[in-house]
Length: 155
Image (cartoon, rainbow, N blue to C red):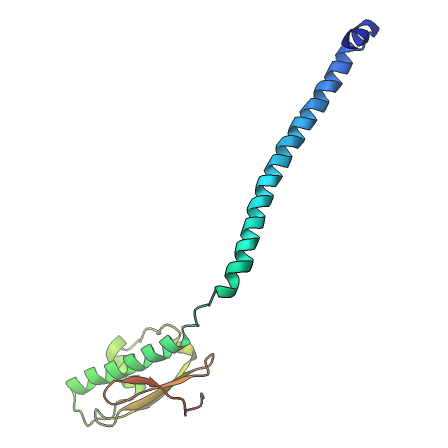
């Protein structure tokens, strides 16, 4: 058949068209192979997500940790204050944080959303903390023990 085209003067055009068709088929075959590989990988990821996601348990937000850390910092600042002064002097939040951080206290992580109430002497110290994004409230006692306060409602 190629001879017939050459004889009619259209051999080069026919061969070029035939070569283009082959290139298109080869390119399509490569594209198809890539799509199969990517499609299989995507399907595998989808299956993994469907079967593994129900077992995923997200970490709770760190609000509780922020409240506990703020209470511990408050208590630690008061302990330092009492060691330098008298155990019978009332220590409040401002005094404690100035003791720890100086006149220009550094903000504690998440501190701007925590409400802390309390203070006291070394024998009567008590404070509570709540976070506007948490339904829990924590308290600290004169021994520095932090516990959840189920009976207390957040502010």
